[in-house]
Length: 55
Image (tube, rainbow, N blue to C red; front, side):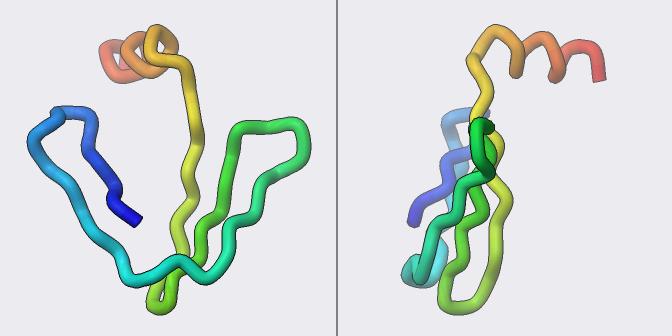
């Protein structure tokens, strides 16, 4: 899996993905790789930009 950062200039390559779990009725995923676990929250671009500018 490749994780691309919002700046568009950086990315991170993980070890192979073993499984992906999704929370019911939400855009939140838990991704398990051979060595790690990640929590991924999918947001629309406008909301993500608002959160970034206010926090």
